[in-house]
Amino acid sequence: MSLPVILRPEAEADVLAAHAALEQAQTGLGAQFSRRLRDVLERIEAMPQLYGIIAQDVRAARLRKFRYIVYYVIISERVEVLAVLHSSRDSSAWQSRA
Image 1 (cartoon, rainbow, N blue to C red):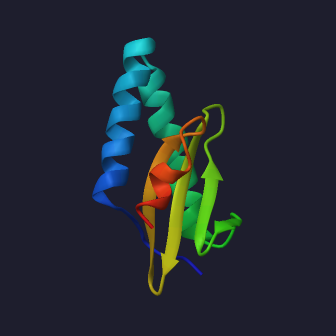
Image 2 (cartoon, rainbow, N blue to C red; image 1 turned 30 degrees about the vertical axis):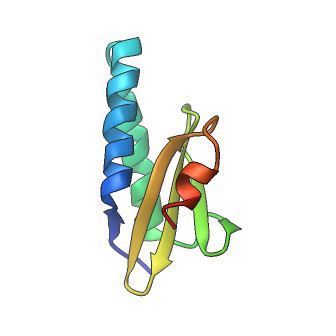
């Protein structure tokens, strides 16, 4: 069951901030992050139920080689990404978006 993946505005802001911070830390790191994120989003699109539920209907997928987590929900005919946050962040950051 393939479903389109939509990033909420807050999640888009998370991605832009992470990309900028990683690119500032090391040239090219932001691009690597973007590729890993794209890989995860494609897996979520192809198999939305692949990743486990962590709270209520919220699922979490970890990016390989990065300590970022994609938090998302399946809503009828689509997947909505709530947040893309570093794993060290307080979990309440995404919970307020659910």
